[in-house]
Image (tube, rainbow, N blue to C red):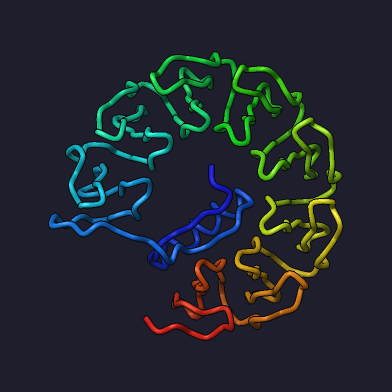
Length: 313
């Protein structure tokens, strides 16, 4: 799973749900300003950005894929679809998930209750209420022993068993004990874990490198992570040193040297020294991508540059 979440332009009534989902993941939040969509003769309700050579399209609540020339690889028939990873894409039909290849062939039958994306040759899938991992031919590689499982990242996957989380490798060896109340995937060698309502960070040997003391914590972006303590957000480095004090009502991760932060119900941007470079004036603010960010002000969403100047559409 990607550490940041990018969106193309969305309607205002979707903003709240996107923000809530991202906050729950602890990710940074950015609009993709470099979205490339294929030109199509056929008119779709929705056309996604090109990713690994394909775009997801939707028409009359049915999903499928088009290539970069705008051609459908197969007729649209699925209830849901996700992007390709390692030449496989998750698709859903009649509440069952499976996988198609780049030719649109159903290479793994649609029989799973849930399916994650392929990473490091394996994908987590749920069958009869239990999770395991399959390979690209659909063969079960890690048995369906877990209550939940997340795709492999940096050679390890977080798994849940009996209400506790830990990490396994691709051979199903328990590399980090299943003892945490929650555990997020590894990112740049560190993983966020929670015990008794407090978050901290461990390395791949399971050693606590930043104490479990925060009310919330994110992954590291550009060397810093936003963390919450006593109801306020600040930023730490990978040694756990506090770099930017706990003073914000909310914060997202750094991108292109700036981070959106919230104070007194308004959002602005700070640099890595904690200096306010774009004033607190927005109702919401997204991260920067290619020198551009989207902000919301008085129910209007528009672009700004890194000096806070509005960019004409």
